[in-house]
Every structure is written in C-alpha cells, then in structure tokens.
Image 1 (tube, helix red, strand yellow):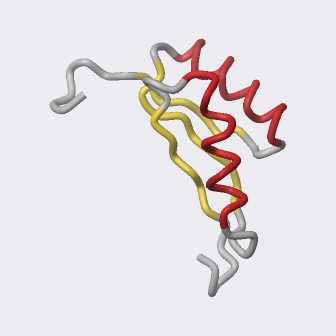
Image 2 (image 1 turned 60 degrees about the horizontal axis):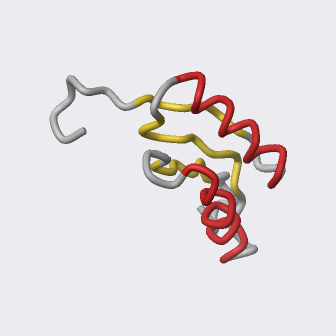
Length: 79
C-alpha cells in the first residue's frame, strides 16, 4: 500500500471496544504517516443502528471516513 500509495481500508472489531475505539483507530492511522487510509469499517457491531451511530461519532472525532458496519451474525461458525 505504501509503495503504490494505495488507500487502506481499516476493518476494526467493535464488539468489545465501544468508545475506546477512537484512540485505537487514531493510533493505527497515525503510526505510519506515509500510509494513506481511505476509511474504516466496524466489524461485529451489536446492530446496524449501533454500528452506524458509533461509526459516525468516530468519523466526526477523527475525520476518517466511516464506510460501514457489519453486525454480528450468529449463524456463522466462529462468531
């Protein structure tokens, strides 16, 4: 990604973190200033609504585009 200047989509598990995701995402994004992040996706949110609400709060705080949320799917093995 760095060599080609290709934007990275960050996928973050949100099931256990909630509001503490802001410093986690900020740390990842700021760790290497040469990497370009195109946005983030929240994985394993409790519901679509909760994921959207949390994603929008994080986007407003960090300025990183919120691209979507994936809810926990109980019918998949390993969830």
